[in-house]
Length: 420
Ligand code: HEM
Image (cartoon, rainbow, N blue to C red):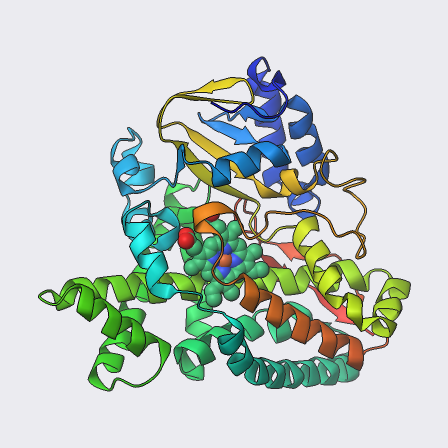
């Protein structure tokens, strides 16, 4: 049994943690979670969560949980063992739990293998011209709105549209559906949050029903007129795996298409808004990056580290274990805090400084078996857009601080007003 990190997490006051979690969920915590991450980390690498389970706060401990074999995703079998049925056995939670990120071997391994390296060099090269054309068009629109109104909302004009246009192009989702896809994605996400209320779960259930109808229709159309596109390829693959059960094939294609679509949207949009927010605040930094485009990738990595679009993720102990000196019983939850980990000063010096030359460490795309399949695509979108923005605007200043949806797991910037 490996033991990593500090062991102070065993003896602390749960009330201190409750108060920090409240702060994290408040508007102040949403706009600047760093002081709370810092205080949580000061309590220990492994901190008891007020609702049961634990928060992993240090870089090495988080890494160990993500990569260790004794940690599993909280799948449907685990959910069925939980006493809290109104949380874990609601339709929205159950539906999303059939998706890749909540699967464990052997089903996870089979589905993951079926995707191969979806965004290898060849696929990225095929997607790049489309991403570039869309980025140019959206930046034209941003420039025009700023010229006309003096300021414009980066999120609605550029940040939200670019990822849905990109994944729409890849999966063949017609543009007339993009607004609806974005909308149900925003509403569905509650069931993936840490402590959703009953009414949030109801909102999520409605969005789940709309998602079901939409993607089932898309797959039906693709079955009727198969082509050389990605979804038709998935249908062919899963038909071969389930030769006597086309319904099972359709279900798997549904789970993959639905989840890959929604997983690609908010996270990428948050990265784009964050990059503009962190870089645009300092006009000298923006101008410097214009003159040194070779550091655009470094700037994107620092934006990924500084404020990960997903703040935390959950694993459960597959067996009784010890994590950083804290005994953890089989089936208990551990929440891996990506943001707190990336701001661990033992890993990244002066973590509160946004430094595009840092070459820092982060686990913003996860790690281990569930490592993000879309990381290369997200980076391509960010690089293409940032290059376009830097080329177009001598400065791109945020007019005010961004606004955020009140969430703990999936970050969402709802608005970022910018001007030149
Ligand atoms: C900045 C953008 C993105 C961020 C920060 C991000 C982050 C993550 C993280 C942290 C995980 C691991 C989840 C876990 O361990 O349970 C993950 C998994 C995943 N991501 Fe992303 N993601 C991004 C963009 C994308 C894109 C563009 C796609 C698809 C086109 C995508 C598809 C997926 C899928 C399918 C999984 C599940 C993998 C598995 O469970 O095996 N993501 N992502």
